[in-house]
Length: 433
Image (cartoon, rainbow, N blue to C red):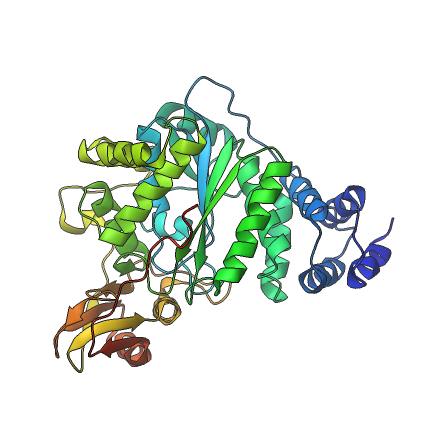
């Protein structure tokens, strides 16, 4: 085998065997298959696609490129959750302690911001002192002690994905469905899980803009999991407006804590409970989603899920001040409201525009080495379908400087529409099998 011939075959639309895909992945990690060769292979894959067996082979080769955890110690089922990324999607933060409180073990390895969408690790690291770069032994111990923890991808966990993703990000091959599937599932399956629930976002603020694309990705994820004998359950949810009210790292952590306190925004609360219920059903702890949602609400109402979140954060070095306003999280020095020019009903909030504005404020990255300002962001005061009066606040911009707030205000003026007629709210979950 040699890389040149395999690239040419993929370019011509011919399928590769498992040994050939393993050859490419292993060779790239040893620098025998050069970056320019692997980039050519990724582009050929993005154009030609992959068969189901090829996608499985790539997923398995990437998963086995590093350490694979094995949680065999006594405890609840090991089930994780993943989201394909959306604006304001902070659901993993409250979900993990709720799921653990309901009897699951959740070894969550998360990612950083990508484009207009925020990253769970960046949100968590806005908590002073919070560490997510855990050694494998520490990661395992926290799952055993607390039922869950938040970790990051280290050098010995799916190293092939780290290398390939950097190339995909630089070669316009991020959106390829086989490459998305192998990237997501290789990381999740390396956690040693027994199943995963995946929230596939669909809309202007997501990578999959149309329902057809989201359905295709969902089907590929579930089919790959089935062949690898690890159950994958997907649900498709809307991402045409931001999820919840807060967009921006520290602001989203604050909102996640409010969800755990039982006073979060309705859409974020509903999705959190639904995804926990899906995890409980997948783990065999409940017989139907209704019972799962009852357990999720009970974990919040008892206060135990919030207590577990604080314990997890503390065990990972984080410092929250639960009796202070804002919980001791960093705050931006400038706050500027954006008001409605006319009265009516909010008919559109462009999720991508909001996400890109937060990124421009410093809340996301344009290059991998960019630093993030955890303080900045946007808080929505109205959602689609809400009635608004002329002069009423639509949203608040949290910025580091007045000039940045002014630029953000200009970029957001066209991102929100107000209609004279009432607007029906879009359903949160687009698939309910």
